[in-house]
Length: 180
Image (tube, rainbow, N blue to C red):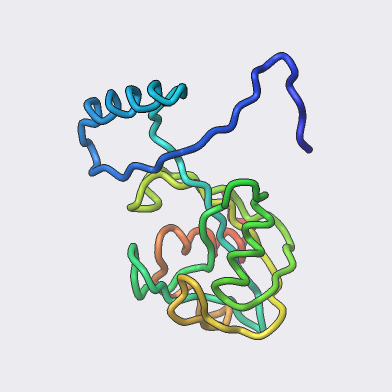
């Protein structure tokens, strides 16, 4: 549901993603960006940002769908399928898009597993992931960031080393009474 706020001047926000080494001094860069923005009649604010992602625990043909990552970080590691939420998407829409792109499957969401927000969960920077338990439908096919895609039997999936904090997400999805 979108709301209008008539008392507030409406504006669009754009983000220029600047990737700087951890701890880098960006003060000179910040000043140059402010000068450039003012030249065009804009206001610039530099804030450290958080990425919003989704992860899916997909139940499919008696197992759980895992991908083998094509790219860093964790290249060639097993992982849950997932990715970044795009501007204008709900997390549910992003989940369905990412699952289709990486696994070829359409998913039916069963429930929210949890929100995972440890600032160190992703070496690329602070990301918050919204994880869902889903049922997969269709034909399995690796795509996008997935080098390969597998269905791992439920009794074996928790034995595999997984990227990021995906082992915790998987445990929470498969054993909800043990959460928290």
